[in-house]
Length: 200
Image (cartoon, rainbow, N blue to C red; front, side):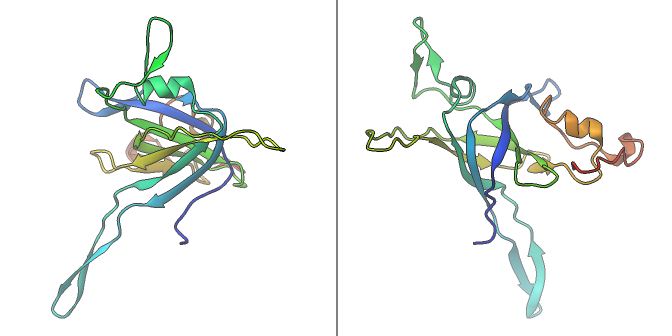
């Protein structure tokens, strides 16, 4: 399949998603997730055809986001408590509770292999509990990674993801991991913004 994205991921962050007072979606400050190994995402949803008059009369868009895996050297404890909702007890032992609901979050990242280091954000993500697995050491030691199955779904507004481009302003690019980027209507930008040569 040619629709899979998998590169050398870096600068991985997550930001908890919550409902703001006005009912719109808002996000907390992004938190770094060190040790990202790989990211593989497949688009979810294929265009559907409507036939009339003996022809393909209309093509129905069906963007249901992305599904895939995020592989990490070790899932950060903050992600386990913030998103997977594991609870620290009185002895600071992380406890998994079947009655807890996992949290929604935005996933921010960039690919080291990109010449311009394009920065991405996926909105409205959820993550499943990782497998518990490991194996004994043999003649050579092999690092045991942990994998999260991630689902990114459209927000109520329809937004699924965003990424920097060749004309993204330097201010937006540099502040990508300070707060989750949300689309701004062109009328509010006051123009096209400064170009970020060699970044985007």
